[in-house]
Image (cartoon, rainbow, N blue to C red; front, side, top):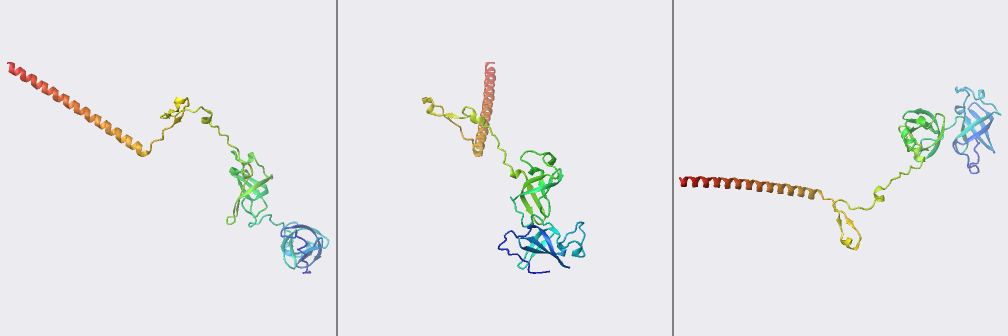
Amino acid sequence: MEENTAPNLEQNGEMTTKTHFTGKVTLVSLAGAKIDLGDGLTGLIHISQIKTADGQPIKRVSDVLKPGDSIEVWVKRVRKDRVELTMFEPLLYDWRDLKPDMIVKGKVIRLETFGAFVDIGAEKSGLLHVSELSHGYVRNPTDLLKEGEEIEVKVIEVDRKKKQIKLSMKALEAEPVKEEENVEAAKPTRGKKGSKKSKSESTGETETQSEPDPTAMELAYREAMTKEKSKNQDASHNKKEKQGLKDQEDLLTRTLEQKVQTK
């Protein structure tokens, strides 16, 4: 096989990894084949990158390819002296290509109660959790999706170590506007409990000023004062009762003494 098959890459900016071509076999050898890509471009395909219809390994290139055959190929690698091709369709996204916030298209390949698996052209399918389907409540993914459906999703997380891709549909939707009715604003202004009216009432204008809420220390002080007042009241009441009993005893004593003297 001829080795000097590298195209003029400066003149052809489209010649990059994963570029797809429909080429024609021009030469077959034991190691592989030479492919005419058109517009003066040629590439080499190694025997390991030749695909059979039944997926079985090949023993000889000539058993699969013959000069003049038209085949589908992709650019596997671009070197200085040659362009290496493959008949195996490459992944659309390598792990290094996937980034959060990327918007990609994919096909729903499986539905589960917890979500859907979507093929976006990566090594692993991405998980579209049921909570990421919509801003509203979704009971089951089958309410919105069906297998084989083409959808657009946003990549929200990529874990290369665990080989996990998390996707979202609701991230592409505008968040619903929450209508908050300000009931207080619609009602006329009224003074709160404990509010004081200012002197502006004399001019016909009513102005309310709400008393600030007491602090914890103020509450504790008030409670202590209330208990002390109650204690003092109880002590005073007990003192009055004792004085009354003493007065009754004195009166009884004086009465008895007078009866004794009159005898």
